[in-house]
Length: 369
Image (tube, rainbow, N blue to C red):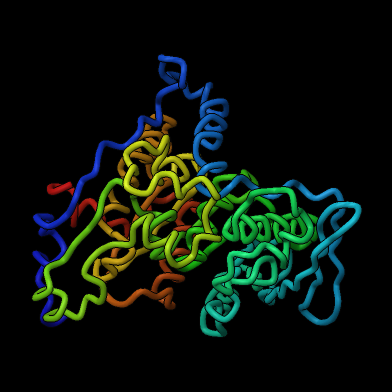
């Protein structure tokens, strides 16, 4: 792009490294995870050390679940316990082909627009759309008197965990449909939606592919690495925010996205027993694609690369190093057709057993981070 200088993206002189990343291979007992056969047990340990603290745990599995075909492409999903349930709609846009089809689910609603749906259908994918805010409103209120909180009032899960639970219920519904290839369920989301998809995939092994786009802190980013850009560079190249989002920022603006105990780690991020490479690794050996703009300093692209590198060590140990990838681009904090197509390509490459050609983060950051 005209006017851009690669040094804009590789100058780390202002960045802050708060501390080293926790070891994904530690078994918590002074030993190490040293065999691929032990991965299921290690994965559960990784999730126990991250999800309850970061997101307040996950909502319970539903005692009651059903999915009703309402009309045309619209389905009503109802789930909860014997006393209370919550309902939300899911729309399915199917390609005009016979047989079982892969499905791409997006809870960002209007973000999954006609252009992206048509491209999914052209490639033979079902596009499944729902509104994650039907599970928990994103209304900047800390009171827990709405949505899924009313169904499980004694639980401590956060809004992002409620949204991830919504993805899981969509998977429940899709697994009961004879036109869905249940071995190829994919999910995608932007920003807070990308935080959600990373959590949803980390905690549900039925999800084969996940894209987390520009998801930053508590998503693809890194609590222990803060990215900065100088004012001149920000103004010259229109980079937006001069620094990456932090735990303090999240708790000041949207505390209901996180678990209640995360506030105890403000200024003590190095004492967290996890960082975001934990959730990335928990997706293994399944497929994870991160898409992010190098201009989106707020989303911490360099921190995203560091936690990717750490998680990739697990993928490589399991013999599936190419199942995790990153595609970096220029441009705004967005999830446009380019990002969707890179995810569709990622799925198609995996299904054909060929190398994904758009992974590029090592070319940008490999020698400096």
